[in-house]
Image (cartoon, rainbow, N blue to C red):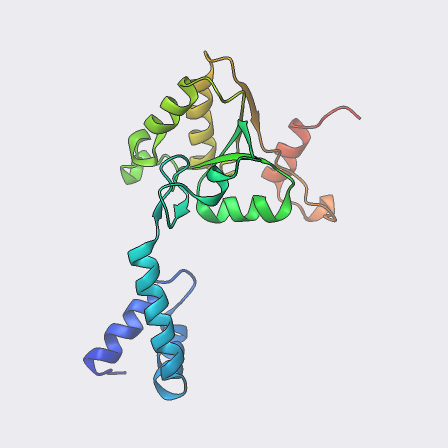
Length: 198
């Protein structure tokens, strides 16, 4: 279907969102233009405000509207614990699901030599400086259980190996309520090898 140039640009911009294919992008574009122009203007304004006003925290690299994010600025957090995650959404997931009261370090990605993403691209030089300051006593590696996430966790563990820091890695395995026969082989093997005493 041939769109006008402005509609084509809108559909193409919406396709850039994760999980949005051509049909969904068209449906969203048409909905905003046909039925919700006020909502579309509010969305455009909120998006522009976020682009202009949201940066990165100077300490943890999470999204922040100020120099320091609210978590790093909270004096009640345990500054001796540092949890390394790949993205800001990981911080939100851990905050909502756990009682963790330490601080975070957000990589904004993972090591991927194939894509040209090296240690400095994900802030590992900054993490190294932070660890060298000596305040962190426990480093929790919470990268994703992918090949790249595991490689990133291994690289960080090597960085911290000679420092007086306790290293831990998030457990991976059988989900709560899951049945063994339906769990994929890789997850089951990881869970079996990471078993603990009862």
